[in-house]
Length: 202
Image 1 (cartoon, one colour):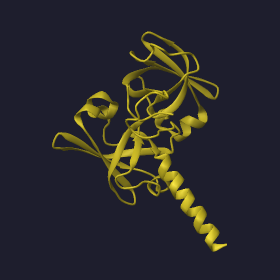
Image 2: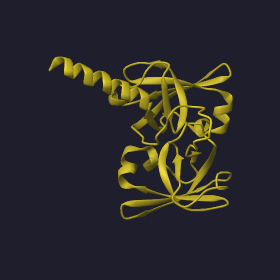
Image 3: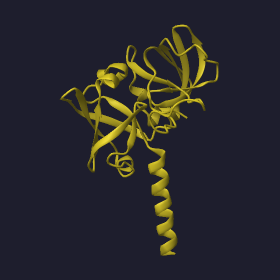
């Protein structure tokens, strides 16, 4: 489980396919202090397992099913990625519950300066849009963000200067693919309501 508060960013340095598994190595520092093999690590919002690491790198294996439903298939050497270690019981809950189970891929449609902030409009598929709530939470590349506006095809989020500088949002361009995860609370509420309505109809 994660919070969507990115700890640091790193860069993809290698990407090698081995059958149905792709080994990815990232150049990253500052998260290896208490790291162990087998730890969960959110990489651009995708929960992956650490299979090797050193003072300046982390390796993860990505299965073909994950490549199909995330933007990882578009990652190239040099691309910057957000990292967050899994939540400790004693940690502060600064964002929202993020599972690292990506619901789908979105596309950056607009990137506009709004005062000190930067506003992104992101296109998403109907199943994802239907579960989003205006002023609710969404994870974009693993970053816990608040939905500003919402329509039938897209939504906007406002990025404050600190988040813009400390995550890979500053590297996103028009057309860039991003990983999206809907707030688990929103999913649960909608599922409960639909279940109630079905019972009323039967």
